[in-house]
Length: 433
Ligand code: SAJ
Image (cartoon, protein in one colour):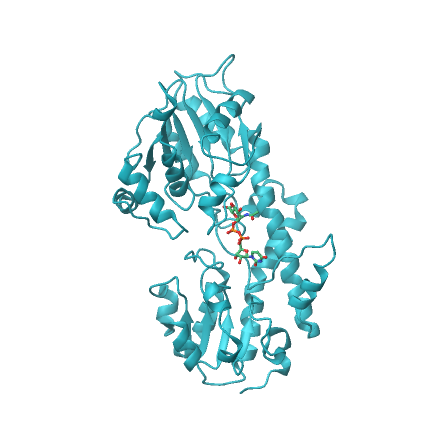
């Protein structure tokens, strides 16, 4: 690298993490090449548009494409820094699948040269970065690979997990602290220089293995705490108590901070990553496993509770509010709201109206059931049964007078002013009309 501004960066994977990361780095003046296996994604990005919904991402991408600091390709090119941001799904038995990471590393191996830095950002089981190093040492015997050579290595290899929250990605990419784990301490220092270009939060260095476990720990922590809230909601429901009120009251204790119950836990991170810890040590992870099971089980509970409400007004149209895995995003992956809506639609077909401002058409299973996509105003005019599955802002802002006479199952607790007889936890006392 001659000067800092000429830094060349290749980002492998232009998904929810890779594209915002590539765009933020391009904004610093570095020349960024985004690589994706999908020609459609590459064409979309090169035309200055985005294929995912994320606050302010469209403006940023069109800006850096116009400026010429970001471009996309399906073909890798030489670079100074390689950032791997590809999916790490799990297989049927919850065992992690690092196939995409190894494929990306194989691609990097075709162009990596002395002085380069290779950074893995994908959430990965402990030991994955070392596997990347091992693979590179096999594919590039001409290079001194960290962990596989004596003396100073030719390239640096590090793990730095992304930690951003969908909906706040561009803010959190800059402001969040980063944990940077090197295969060796020198690798961590090299990766640190790169992150300092665009991260305002603290950058803390450690080993690759500790950084990998840190990432899994963060998401398992959240999953366990949401499971606690979901379990409470089921217990409170059985006792006819308002769980939201109990949580509000308990959280007035200075050392209690209970999260929010809901119809389950979705997305591609919290519902997935804890399994990587369970798979690594099944004997010693009963709490993490149980939390996953409690959160997954909340979907069936929600469907059953919805059915007790639906049964009170036979033949009336039912509105399911929301399909996304959480509020104000267009991401339906692993969405509990989607699973609940599908189960209700499978049973009640054309009675079901789906309101999802972030969808332009229904997913296939829902469309086939006879359910119809509709807007919130039509749903409020025509449906006496409302099942709130996602806490989108547009739903939160519906005033009481537009829903006071409805049968409501509010799985997200967005309408604390709803007459209590209409609430999920007092379904037994609900009266039609
Ligand atoms: N949820 C609840 N109750 C809550 C909070 C969340 O039911 O109190 C549900 C949401 O509705 C959603 C699911 O949990 O279905 C996950 O949502 P989330 O907002 O907790 O997390 P994600 O999946 O959007 O992002 C998480 C974040 N991790 C943590 O907060 C520890 C983010 O910082 C990570 O970068 C991201 O996972 C990731 O990529 O790993």
